[in-house]
Length: 182
Image (cartoon, rainbow, N blue to C red; front, side, top):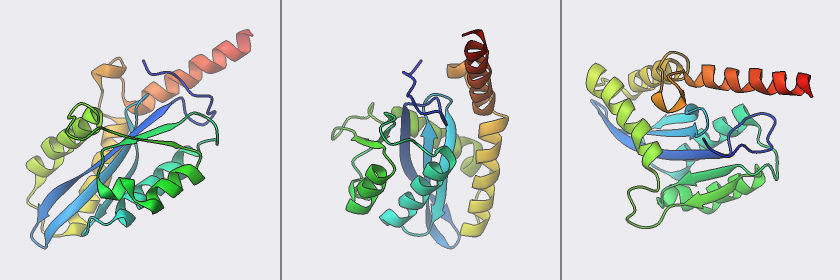
């Protein structure tokens, strides 16, 4: 179990991020995800027709708005060494939100294995199962539906066969019980 941060809005001490490519009839699309390591919850995502740093920055902004990290709360954001994640704008946004950036080492497939796992699940459960995609808009809609299902219906063995939402709710129930007992 990851070390918990002092952030009152999220038990997570770490986030992971990555993106993948998905073929559509309109051309290639990119899908980015940011997930909370503690609960395995996807907290930011974006679909784009270009792989500029703006689209991963949009996913980061969604995660920041959802989680509202506290400066100095110890939240670490891990990504691979892709140019989008190493850009000045992305790094500045992390620092501005009080999040410590962390990037993997070159050629190490284990550094971002959890993010790659989410992408693998997305490709297996969405793109291979429901594709091919006629449009980027159709892919975006199906991604939205999958993220909701992933967070609220899909159980994960790493968190005791709970959904990410259930894992967070259980954490807060336990935290509230401990505060009442104290």
